[in-house]
Image (tube, rainbow, N blue to C red; front, side, top):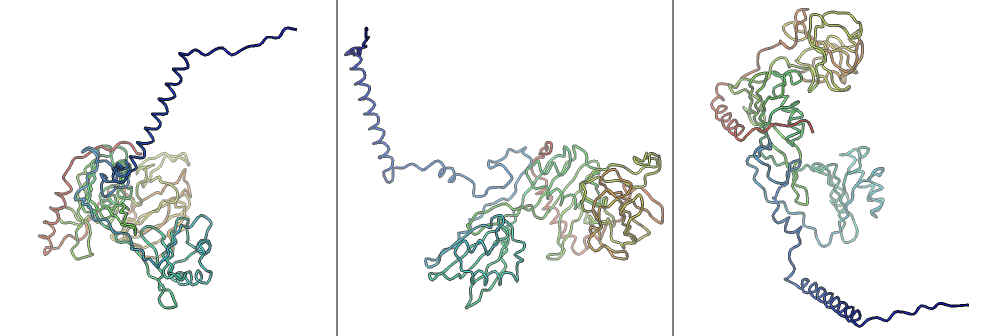
Length: 467
């Protein structure tokens, strides 16, 4: 039998020399890199990390909901007098105190969370018993935070419970018992301006500009006596708002934007006309909104019984009923809105009917002065405690949108009659409320001019479709 044997091939001297040189170069490069790393770690020679440099050049205040970079002039929002404030220093922790903090998790109680932190049961009971007089712990929710302060002997000397970044409670040991105080962070108002053009709805336009929809609601409330923002808003309508943005500083010195505050001045220019209003206090803490001429924006009747709905059927002398399949007058306006949307009284008055009324479903009727009666039909339920004979105020919730009676979907049928005769609610205009007094008028005019000058600065940017 023949066997084949394979011998290794001889390595040439050229290849051996090349491998030796390559290995030596690799070793020298590795040693050089290692030495450079040690040198860069030498005290005083380490460059600032990128994130430290970024923080050093960042603005003192971050505006929540807005881009961190300065927006271009046509971004649709301008901030006026937005000066920065010195950050609040975090609390000084004493050396003989020990601090334990945590957050309530889903399914946990405060007693369980504290027990997991090693707090004695007797102390937990004492703390929760004192706090229970101020806070119902059945309302404990995931995300509520707590902070326990103990002395060198392990006794709890202070306990903080935060239900939100803005509100909480602190229990401090005084003698042999805990004294509880309510904590409310003070808000810092900053004046700001937002301006834009409606593309779909006012709600969408404000949201597209980076601000809370609550600002749109507050704006609509100011002009609710003159504009039905359901039927009167058109694409291209312009608005300007001078308002306060409310900030708070937490215990660690971090400042954050919370929400929009009071509107100081507002303008609306659209199919409903050119409107303006300013907030003015005739006495400290007693203020309201007035037109540029000093007359009140408030009237006897609001233009609509709810906010941001859609008109599904208008007042008509002959409408084809979608259920009865007959043509007959529709003596009101149907506002389609999600089931459960609050419905309010359009004026002060007295409830004269509350109950089921055939095709109207759940119906509320309110009698007002000068022979006016308003109707609110198809409600899902009535306002809390609403009774016949009860006095109600303008904008008081008297029911909620539903689809009871002859209805094809959730809406409210709003009607108004005077001396027993129905008429189109859209044509109702009533006198304004009390104007600024003659004694206060010079002060009002100066204040008005200052607000409108600040409101009128800057450019208007169009808002795109809803986000």
